[in-house]
Figure 1: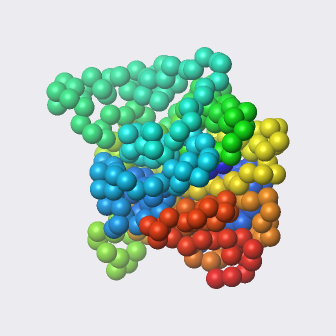
Figure 2: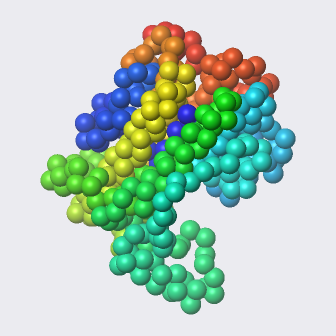
Figure 3: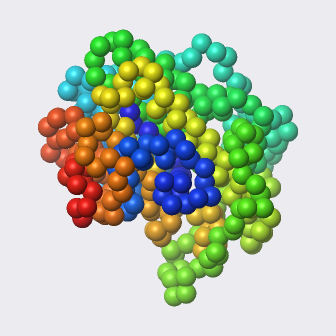
Amino acid sequence: LFIAIDDMRPEFNCYGKSYIKSPHVDSLASKGLLFERAYCQEPICNPSRASIMTGMRPEKNGVFHNNQYFRDTLPNVVTMSQHFINNGYNAAYAGKIYHRGGENDEGKSWNFKTLSPKIKKAKLIGGYATKENQEIFKKNKADLMKQYGKIPGGLLHGPAFEQADVADHDYPDGWTTLQAIETMKKMKAAGKPFFMAAGFKKPHLDFNAPKKYWDMYKREDIELAYQTKAPVGGATTGLHCSFELRTRHGIPKSGDIGPELSKTLLHAYYACASFVDAQVGMLLNSLQEQGLAENTIVVLWGDHGWHLGDMGVWGKATNYEIAARVPFIIHAPWMKSKGKKTKALVELMDIYPTLADLANLERPNHLQGKSLVPLMDNAELE
């Protein structure tokens, strides 16, 4: 079970950060190995995910930007899930695993049809559940068409956040959870080992989450970033103007993001983190209910971090610690380092060789990462 979380800082409760409520990820960490110093290959979605799935650095797989597809440079590379397929597994995905790749490398990385639950799927507009935010999104779309005659890339958005009194599955991540559960049931019935990938889009912008997750936090308890200025003597190209956030409705296009808005954005981000945590809990509960927990490896990772006002930046795409360091937890039922934390320096590129070793598969020759199985046996290694 391969769980991806988008734009998540390593600040779940199990990472010692008490302000995010994450009981289900914490439970996974209590049974697995938590990596305290895990880093992505590049702090934006596509290069990070392409690196994870190919087991190669951007310099080798040729993916440095969000608009590239790794098979344009390496058409025959065997991806992680494809390697499992080649060794007798069924592989399926729900949600966001790749950022670019047809869109998810259909027919190569996946060979099993993703199923959906037998309930009605909510009709969102622009990712928004409330009528008010849907209208804002539609107006922005009309304005862009009037001004440019087309929709310029990256500019079509509504508000940066939303709390709506809706069910989890009315938003895409909740739907992804139900898809993954239904698909795992079918995979179990098929009688073959499986590789199930579930990719959650939150807490990526827009910070939209059901109201009950917003209600888990008190606004007065939320603290702003303590360092809001660029490091003295830091490289002028090391930071940016928070371009991803500023394209959203209601966000200043220049200047400071004020304290009241900053607190709302933090509240929204925390709500999204707890929303995703609940989805992880549903997946883990499904493994138990299906009798699969004692024979399933679970790996949870985030593709990169995110500045939440740190150094004056809102977003990723910097090479500072806050954007490059990620959450990363592995659990295998037979591992020795259960409930442990390791300070060993690791990369997300290490997941591919690690899972190959755990499943007793021969590693492809192109992999550049290192297997982390020794750490799973002895968390004290460095």
